[in-house]
Amino acid sequence: MTRLALTPFARSVLIIGAFGLIGLAVGGLVINAAAALTLGPLWLGLGLAFTGVTVLLGRDKSGDAHIDLDATAASGATMPRVARTPKSVPAAESLAPSAPGVLHVAILTPDIPEGFPPVIGLGEATLVRIRVMYDGEPANGTGLRLRLREPGGGDETLEGVAGDGGDLEFEFEPEATGTLELMADATQGARKGHARESISVVRYEDEIQRLFAEFRSYAVGIFGPQSEADTARELADRLRAVADDEAARALLELARIYELVAYGEREADRGLYHHLLRQLMLLEQAALPDAPPRDGVSPLEA
Image (cartoon, rainbow, N blue to C red):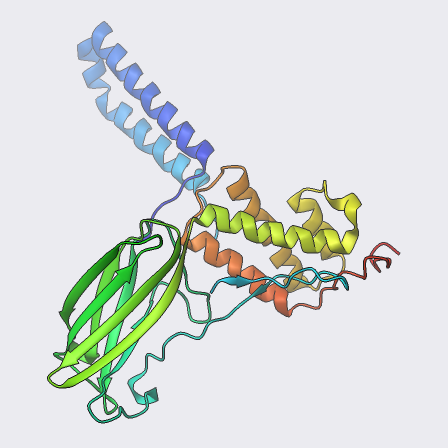
């Protein structure tokens, strides 16, 4: 289901306006109830029009693993890079035939886009799909058990039976940040199978700010210590001078996402975090300069 998101200012306007209309209506009833009731349809129309205009103009249109960042070496800094972790192969035809008596088990995470790092948000409803195959065919009816080992201790066990396609889905909400271990066991008569995956649980706000801090370190490595006081937008604008059009847009988006979170204009969520990763992936491929040696001079300053 798509959630309608409003900017903080729009939410404030909507709340204040709603209370104002309610106050006028109540005041009208107290002063002249008969006249106020006669004007009821007008009040209703004004309320609906006000709400519609506020929602239309105030809608937040913002973007709909772990991050492996190269350490800044003595030779200079480089653009942060997104470490792509291959996901379990979901296609039945891509699976090799199982060994005799062995079930092939895959742990899939539909909420994490293909090629993205295995990262989810704290307290965020997350879907996990267990797929079990035997000899290249779905092993329907297989008993499945998923064990979740939360960061800092504490286990949860979920059980069920594989349905059509050999799939069974579970949904859970992680309760602590850190590394979450997922262990799947499959049993079908004498046949057994196992799979294990790790997922990082983060607070999206902290992760977005951490990633931008790494980007800031890269940019300061380019422009020198005098740029440490520059805002996110100023750093992005300076780098745009040596970027192509696509990378320039990504730089502005990177700064915009950081500002939305840092200034409290939007709650960091899965969509915003994935949008940030897309910009980093694009910038990783862009022809942006590395920082010069510490005793050298940046070509951008020349």
